[in-house]
Length: 579
Image (tube, rainbow, N blue to C red; front, side, top):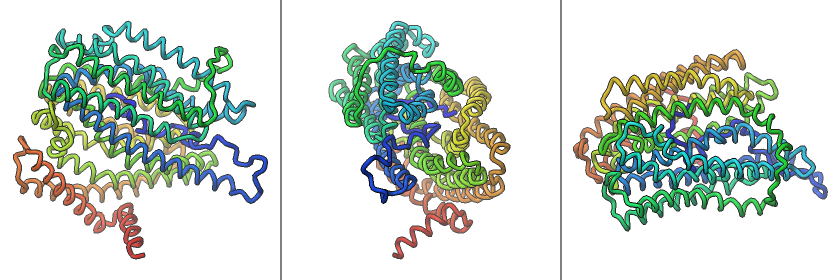
């Protein structure tokens, strides 16, 4: 239900696996021969291991998101808005093919199956994993070759309505970047094997290698060719090889970076071709609903890419700006909402397995209120400070002031969807905790249909300059619909989710957020700087002062309105300072 443009290799931490409890199971036996009876109880060891793994994943995810964001900033700074749109389209193609083939199925099916085979097979799943990797290598290589052969066809599908120079550049970049799907899929499978063997560090840190390689490639581009906005017809083969080859090299380095970790956990790579032993029919049945979920999302993204490609111009917001803003939203979601879901998912899964649905609803209600209260001030900052954020974060090199203004409009609208997106994701993972992948897949069909209808309608009703903002508005409304429908379908399964308490908290949060927004707008208005042509220093001043004022105002109003999720954090800080 995300509505994101693509799930790049640096974004693998965006969400939790549907079977998160399985992912955190240590693959090593806790009571081996020679271990004394005084060893810690299994549940204590599991909790300690989960906490340590969560910490590693949180730090790795934060660094990965940060370097991934710099990576996308470098694309705009080096190529400018128009050619940046071309590059983003070419990068989208292998990611969408990968998502169709493996993206959602990996987390919902392969990780739990690998965990189960690790437990029940005499060789602890070694041969099974070897067969799976062998099949994946063959299937991914064949798919990459077929995709490269049909690069011009894919370009015609995703970049229709553009001139010959634009589509030719997309196709030429695609020849270099479509092989990325091979290395992306291989990395994901190796990461799954490592996770089932209790190794979490390498999969979280390997994408950073990818980001650093791409950042280096675009830095070299700026050094050689300069940072000036150019048109597609001005891109020579040297430039194409540098940016397209750099993107491919980054994913290849990411995959290679995982190989030492495989050896460290004792896994030996051996090609096995007895694929019947994999139980492919069982895998297909298990992954059918998740494939449906992913396929519907990809169809929705197909519409977004086509509409934004048609609207793309040198100064208007297209694919690059849309994706930059979406990644900015995902940074807030990943740091705040995913951390909350990470803490609640094992609890909800265990409670659901024991039939303690009252505990499930209590955690779900608590998570909803917490996500709303904590993300609301960030959404206010995104909306009120959209202009200075766009200048400070994005306006470098070939990314012009006009591009920054276009970005600010998209960010202003996108801020509306931050809280609804997080809540809809929390409800989706509540279904996974039951466990149930069928219902989210079915819910996703009308939600994406609504999103597409809204986005097409907004595209037709307004000018091309509002296209990317219209896509974000369609996203936001669909997130609200997803949250409402999911809540209605969850109630018969788990009981009342405390809607009254949730609505009271939301009402107080809205009042605090509106108050903070009004004060923030007033302060920004009084600060120097022309909103249409902000200098970098003026933007920094507005961002720092405006952000501080919004944060302090929201915190003060939250204390006055007694928003429990905020007062608890403040009380905890006070107690620690008192000590």
